[in-house]
Picture 1 (cartoon, rainbow, N blue to C red):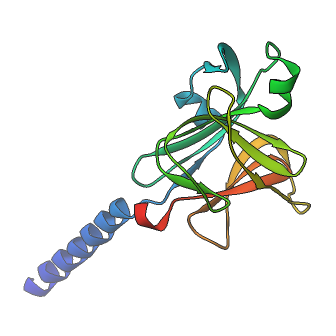
Picture 2 (picture 1 turned 60 degrees about the horizontal axis):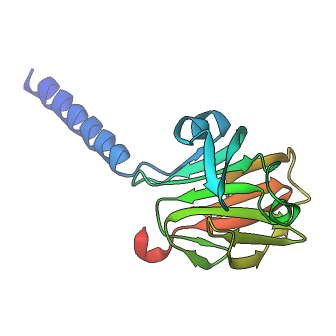
Length: 175
């Protein structure tokens, strides 16, 4: 009887340890359009006016500490041609991140993929930086905008516009 009870307690203890470990090490989640749309606003402010987001073309990452990185294509029809050429999506990050190794502070930004480059602007349409984007000819199902976790490197995520992408990661000091 004692051995049976002892075995039961050991199993219960092991289950509790495993369960608590899973809760502590919850991995980051890639958010697809339905999940990202739940936390994104319907319209955003950029360069002096509001514009609706295309929530069906949105994506994000929810890091294990609860911080979000979100992106959504924007209806830029009310903007000048010069703004439309480089401002394609709204990008929000609650955490310090890196894009292709370039540091980015938390905030809201305008972004766009143009001619093999990914440009990032503040909400006043001032260029902050531009990095080379990569073309993924192996991507099976390109969509207007998506985020995908890199299979070979944990903690790295690709922000795609069609087949072009940049890599998003958290700096080592903030993980």
